[in-house]
Image 1 (cartoon, helix red, strand yellow):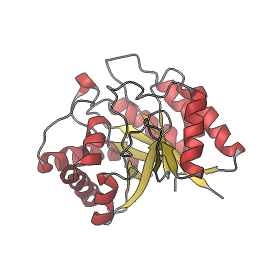
Image 2 (cartoon, one colour; image 1 turned 90 degrees about the vertical axis):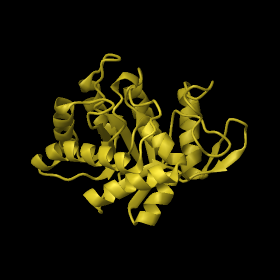
Image 3 (cartoon, rainbow, N blue to C red; image 1 turned 180 degrees about the vertical axis):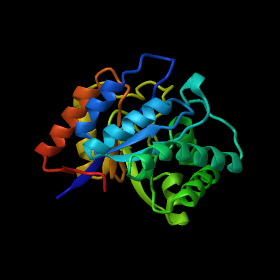
Image 4 (cartoon, rainbow, N blue to C red; image 1 turned 90 degrees about the horizontal axis):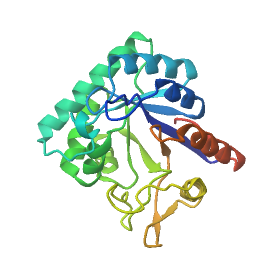
Length: 253
């Protein structure tokens, strides 16, 4: 039987737009794992504490979602940091979230970088290595979630970290297998039907149709659902139900 994880970026409380923690909680019923913001690009102590407890009660694996210290741009602006500083900001954020995870009586499951940190490390091996060094130093048993075919996955393999190749339901892909930049037309897929077709194609055929029409090989082990979308909850349910209807099991590992 085919299986895949459904993950979601959560706890991203921010001053940039209205945040509803109850919507995050409602999404948990459809997920295998969550990536919780650790206070740099978004999130705070309350969202971490609340969602750790909610995820634990729902049986959902808990991961850290570290990003650049860039609340003004939601962590989506590129930053030129040295490998040592990348290491430090990742380690710092893991510790912040893990305080709540440990006191809840559970453990961190994985790490998924956020926004610009994620996208830059997908192409920059030096950055990817720094992230993976921090993750391994903190806990070598943690999984690393990274873009399928990216330098993050390559760095995790070299570092000896377990890893999961991530794909996106609502993002289009460039011919090189990278995500289309958010600033480019068509970067976000707004049609639910198109998103569902893309998800099934990535899992069943192990390819994705790029913006130029070519088929690009892809590894789909975990699918990212964005929790901050206006229709995130019904969309998550549709993906969950569609996978079930096609005999695809959803689980975090």
